Image (tube, rainbow, N blue to C red; front, side):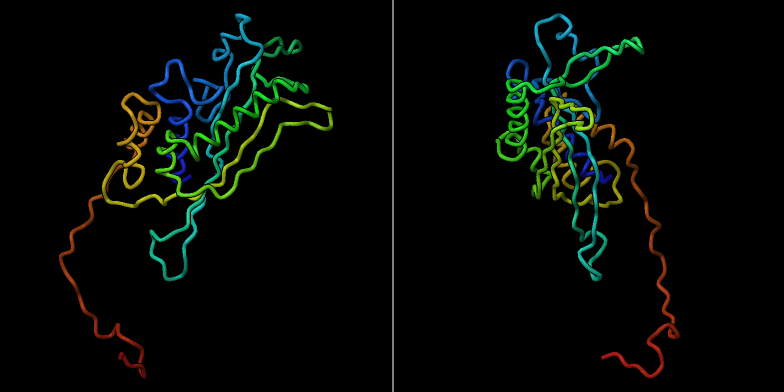
Length: 239
Protein backbone atom coordinates (compact mmCIF):
# COMPACT_ATOMS: atom_id res chain seq x y z
CA UNK A 1 0.00 0.00 0.00
CA UNK A 2 1.12 3.56 -0.57
CA UNK A 3 1.61 5.60 2.59
CA UNK A 4 -0.93 8.12 1.35
CA UNK A 5 -3.55 5.36 1.17
CA UNK A 6 -2.88 4.47 4.81
CA UNK A 7 -3.09 8.15 5.77
CA UNK A 8 -6.43 8.51 3.98
CA UNK A 9 -7.91 5.71 6.09
CA UNK A 10 -6.62 7.30 9.29
CA UNK A 11 -8.03 10.66 8.24
CA UNK A 12 -11.42 9.01 7.66
CA UNK A 13 -11.32 7.56 11.17
CA UNK A 14 -10.72 11.00 12.68
CA UNK A 15 -13.66 12.39 10.69
CA UNK A 16 -16.04 9.59 11.71
CA UNK A 17 -14.77 9.34 15.30
CA UNK A 18 -13.61 12.85 16.20
CA UNK A 19 -11.10 13.10 19.03
CA UNK A 20 -13.09 15.93 20.61
CA UNK A 21 -16.42 14.05 20.58
CA UNK A 22 -17.72 12.88 23.94
CA UNK A 23 -21.52 12.99 23.62
CA UNK A 24 -22.38 13.95 20.05
CA UNK A 25 -20.88 11.91 17.21
CA UNK A 26 -21.35 12.33 13.46
CA UNK A 27 -22.77 8.83 12.83
CA UNK A 28 -24.99 6.31 14.56
CA UNK A 29 -21.89 4.23 15.26
CA UNK A 30 -20.81 6.92 17.74
CA UNK A 31 -17.36 5.96 19.05
CA UNK A 32 -17.54 2.43 17.64
CA UNK A 33 -15.35 3.12 14.58
CA UNK A 34 -12.52 0.60 14.26
CA UNK A 35 -9.29 0.65 12.30
CA UNK A 36 -8.63 -2.46 10.19
CA UNK A 37 -10.49 -4.79 12.53
CA UNK A 38 -13.94 -6.06 13.40
CA UNK A 39 -15.65 -5.18 16.65
CA UNK A 40 -14.78 -7.52 19.52
CA UNK A 41 -16.88 -8.89 22.35
CA UNK A 42 -15.22 -6.39 24.69
CA UNK A 43 -16.49 -3.57 22.45
CA UNK A 44 -20.06 -4.83 22.92
CA UNK A 45 -20.11 -4.75 26.71
CA UNK A 46 -23.09 -2.38 26.72
CA UNK A 47 -25.05 -4.88 24.66
CA UNK A 48 -24.49 -7.57 27.28
CA UNK A 49 -26.17 -5.36 29.88
CA UNK A 50 -29.34 -5.53 27.79
CA UNK A 51 -29.82 -1.83 27.00
CA UNK A 52 -29.48 -2.24 23.22
CA UNK A 53 -30.78 -4.86 20.77
CA UNK A 54 -27.66 -4.32 18.62
CA UNK A 55 -24.69 -1.99 18.36
CA UNK A 56 -24.08 -0.02 15.15
CA UNK A 57 -20.36 -0.26 14.31
CA UNK A 58 -18.03 0.74 11.48
CA UNK A 59 -14.76 -0.90 10.42
CA UNK A 60 -12.39 0.75 7.94
CA UNK A 61 -9.89 -1.05 5.71
CA UNK A 62 -7.44 0.03 3.01
CA UNK A 63 -8.32 -2.53 0.37
CA UNK A 64 -5.75 -1.66 -2.31
CA UNK A 65 -3.73 1.15 -3.90
CA UNK A 66 -2.23 1.67 -7.34
CA UNK A 67 0.41 3.98 -8.80
CA UNK A 68 0.42 4.41 -12.59
CA UNK A 69 2.83 6.62 -14.51
CA UNK A 70 1.32 9.39 -16.62
CA UNK A 71 3.42 8.37 -19.63
CA UNK A 72 6.80 7.32 -20.92
CA UNK A 73 8.23 10.82 -20.53
CA UNK A 74 6.95 11.31 -16.97
CA UNK A 75 9.40 11.47 -14.10
CA UNK A 76 9.27 9.28 -11.01
CA UNK A 77 6.83 11.56 -9.17
CA UNK A 78 4.38 12.19 -12.04
CA UNK A 79 1.78 9.48 -11.41
CA UNK A 80 -1.92 8.71 -11.27
CA UNK A 81 -2.67 7.25 -7.82
CA UNK A 82 -5.82 5.47 -6.68
CA UNK A 83 -6.97 3.47 -3.68
CA UNK A 84 -10.00 1.56 -2.48
CA UNK A 85 -11.27 2.37 1.00
CA UNK A 86 -13.65 -0.28 2.30
CA UNK A 87 -16.03 0.68 5.09
CA UNK A 88 -18.00 -2.14 6.67
CA UNK A 89 -21.09 -1.07 8.59
CA UNK A 90 -23.06 -3.54 10.65
CA UNK A 91 -25.54 -3.88 13.48
CA UNK A 92 -23.48 -6.07 15.76
CA UNK A 93 -24.62 -8.57 18.36
CA UNK A 94 -22.95 -11.29 20.40
CA UNK A 95 -23.79 -14.72 18.96
CA UNK A 96 -23.23 -18.12 20.47
CA UNK A 97 -21.67 -21.23 18.88
CA UNK A 98 -22.89 -24.05 21.09
CA UNK A 99 -20.85 -26.69 19.27
CA UNK A 100 -17.58 -24.81 19.86
CA UNK A 101 -18.77 -23.44 23.22
CA UNK A 102 -17.77 -19.87 22.44
CA UNK A 103 -19.25 -16.44 21.86
CA UNK A 104 -18.42 -14.28 18.84
CA UNK A 105 -19.47 -11.00 17.27
CA UNK A 106 -21.72 -11.11 14.23
CA UNK A 107 -24.27 -8.93 12.47
CA UNK A 108 -27.98 -9.26 13.11
CA UNK A 109 -29.37 -11.96 10.80
CA UNK A 110 -32.77 -11.78 9.17
CA UNK A 111 -34.95 -9.21 7.45
CA UNK A 112 -35.80 -6.40 9.87
CA UNK A 113 -37.20 -3.24 8.21
CA UNK A 114 -36.36 -1.03 11.20
CA UNK A 115 -32.81 -2.37 11.48
CA UNK A 116 -32.36 -1.89 7.74
CA UNK A 117 -33.26 1.79 8.06
CA UNK A 118 -30.74 2.24 10.87
CA UNK A 119 -28.00 0.61 8.80
CA UNK A 120 -28.85 2.63 5.70
CA UNK A 121 -28.90 5.87 7.67
CA UNK A 122 -25.48 5.13 9.17
CA UNK A 123 -23.91 4.44 5.77
CA UNK A 124 -25.48 7.62 4.36
CA UNK A 125 -23.93 9.53 7.25
CA UNK A 126 -20.51 8.07 6.41
CA UNK A 127 -20.73 9.28 2.82
CA UNK A 128 -21.88 12.75 3.86
CA UNK A 129 -19.20 13.18 6.50
CA UNK A 130 -16.31 12.15 4.28
CA UNK A 131 -17.31 13.82 1.02
CA UNK A 132 -19.52 16.77 1.94
CA UNK A 133 -19.43 17.93 5.56
CA UNK A 134 -17.14 20.57 7.00
CA UNK A 135 -15.59 17.92 9.27
CA UNK A 136 -14.52 15.95 6.21
CA UNK A 137 -11.89 18.52 5.20
CA UNK A 138 -9.23 16.38 6.88
CA UNK A 139 -10.12 13.45 4.63
CA UNK A 140 -10.22 15.68 1.57
CA UNK A 141 -6.72 16.99 2.30
CA UNK A 142 -5.49 13.55 1.21
CA UNK A 143 -8.21 12.47 -1.22
CA UNK A 144 -8.51 14.63 -4.33
CA UNK A 145 -11.59 12.94 -5.82
CA UNK A 146 -14.06 10.13 -5.18
CA UNK A 147 -14.42 8.28 -8.49
CA UNK A 148 -16.92 5.60 -7.53
CA UNK A 149 -18.95 4.30 -4.59
CA UNK A 150 -20.14 0.70 -4.46
CA UNK A 151 -22.48 -0.54 -1.72
CA UNK A 152 -23.43 -4.16 -1.21
CA UNK A 153 -25.50 -5.96 1.40
CA UNK A 154 -24.19 -9.14 2.99
CA UNK A 155 -26.33 -12.06 1.90
CA UNK A 156 -25.86 -15.81 1.62
CA UNK A 157 -28.52 -16.84 -0.91
CA UNK A 158 -27.61 -20.53 -0.70
CA UNK A 159 -28.68 -20.55 2.95
CA UNK A 160 -31.39 -17.94 2.66
CA UNK A 161 -29.51 -15.64 5.05
CA UNK A 162 -29.48 -11.85 4.99
CA UNK A 163 -27.32 -10.01 7.50
CA UNK A 164 -27.63 -6.42 8.67
CA UNK A 165 -24.16 -5.69 7.31
CA UNK A 166 -23.19 -3.48 4.37
CA UNK A 167 -19.95 -3.07 2.47
CA UNK A 168 -19.15 0.37 1.08
CA UNK A 169 -16.17 0.58 -1.29
CA UNK A 170 -14.91 4.00 -2.25
CA UNK A 171 -12.58 4.21 -5.27
CA UNK A 172 -10.51 7.33 -4.60
CA UNK A 173 -7.98 9.42 -6.46
CA UNK A 174 -5.21 10.35 -4.04
CA UNK A 175 -1.91 12.18 -4.10
CA UNK A 176 1.24 10.17 -4.60
CA UNK A 177 3.73 9.66 -1.79
CA UNK A 178 6.31 12.44 -1.88
CA UNK A 179 9.74 10.83 -2.22
CA UNK A 180 12.39 12.66 -0.22
CA UNK A 181 15.81 12.23 1.35
CA UNK A 182 14.33 13.54 4.59
CA UNK A 183 13.16 11.10 7.22
CA UNK A 184 9.66 11.03 8.65
CA UNK A 185 6.49 12.29 7.01
CA UNK A 186 6.45 14.38 3.85
CA UNK A 187 4.02 16.06 1.46
CA UNK A 188 0.29 15.85 2.12
CA UNK A 189 0.78 13.27 4.85
CA UNK A 190 2.83 15.80 6.84
CA UNK A 191 0.16 18.44 6.16
CA UNK A 192 -2.50 16.06 7.49
CA UNK A 193 -0.38 15.25 10.55
CA UNK A 194 -0.03 18.94 11.41
CA UNK A 195 -3.79 19.47 11.06
CA UNK A 196 -4.81 16.55 13.30
CA UNK A 197 -5.69 17.41 16.90
CA UNK A 198 -3.33 16.44 19.70
CA UNK A 199 -4.23 13.12 21.26
CA UNK A 200 -6.01 11.78 18.18
CA UNK A 201 -5.73 8.12 17.21
CA UNK A 202 -4.76 9.08 13.66
CA UNK A 203 -1.97 11.37 14.82
CA UNK A 204 -0.56 8.67 17.11
CA UNK A 205 -0.52 6.15 14.24
CA UNK A 206 1.16 8.61 11.87
CA UNK A 207 3.76 9.25 14.57
CA UNK A 208 4.44 5.50 14.65
CA UNK A 209 4.67 5.49 10.86
CA UNK A 210 7.16 8.37 10.83
CA UNK A 211 9.44 6.46 13.20
CA UNK A 212 9.84 3.73 10.54
CA UNK A 213 10.86 6.17 7.79
CA UNK A 214 14.58 6.86 8.02
CA UNK A 215 16.24 9.59 6.01
CA UNK A 216 19.02 9.15 3.46
CA UNK A 217 22.37 10.92 3.24
CA UNK A 218 23.60 10.98 -0.34
CA UNK A 219 27.24 10.62 -1.31
CA UNK A 220 28.55 14.12 -2.17
CA UNK A 221 29.42 14.79 -5.81
CA UNK A 222 33.19 15.22 -5.97
CA UNK A 223 34.08 14.66 -9.64
CA UNK A 224 32.59 14.85 -13.13
CA UNK A 225 34.32 12.83 -15.85
CA UNK A 226 33.75 13.45 -19.57
CA UNK A 227 34.28 10.50 -21.90
CA UNK A 228 34.59 11.59 -25.57
CA UNK A 229 33.92 8.02 -26.67
CA UNK A 230 30.51 8.01 -25.04
CA UNK A 231 28.96 10.51 -27.50
CA UNK A 232 26.50 9.91 -30.35
CA UNK A 233 27.09 6.94 -32.63
CA UNK A 234 29.14 7.44 -35.77
CA UNK A 235 27.32 9.12 -38.63
CA UNK A 236 24.91 11.15 -36.44
CA UNK A 237 25.04 14.81 -35.56
CA UNK A 238 23.71 16.98 -32.75
CA UNK A 239 21.82 20.13 -33.78
